[in-house]
Length: 172
Image (cartoon, rainbow, N blue to C red; front, side, top):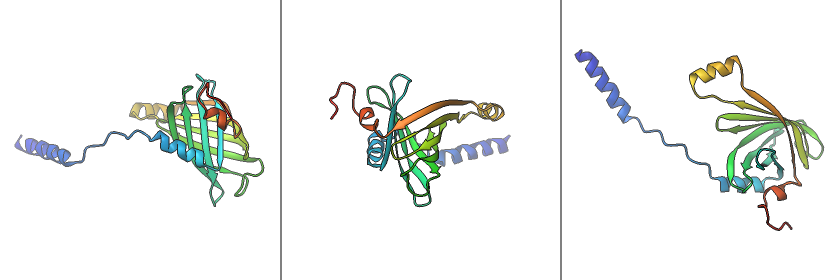
């Protein structure tokens, strides 16, 4: 019994010495938006879900890949989600002609895959959403039967101005 109490006391003191986990820091949406706006390739579109706006900013890397970020805004221009974007395109190191793009956007709790044609002016294709469950039972269930939804997307460079202008504001 004494050994049990000493072991328990030792575990409790060791746990108390560990640093507390910091609460997840909220994303700095203004910084993310500023980075999106500075990207050489910017695309936007309006979602059929409650008038949300989708913004994507990316750039080709030297090794023929794409990097950037995605942000979803509600109809009042409030940020709903944002995350990094990584992918590939079949066009060498420029997107001057239409190429095939495969992109992955990482958001809290889910990954979004975009797969289809892309160019400097637009991107479109199939969108796949895969949930990333956090609880053990959900992970086992997800492994056996993945929860995936499939949809379509179409984003264009021309829609950037409209998607980043609040409703009712004068457009240039």
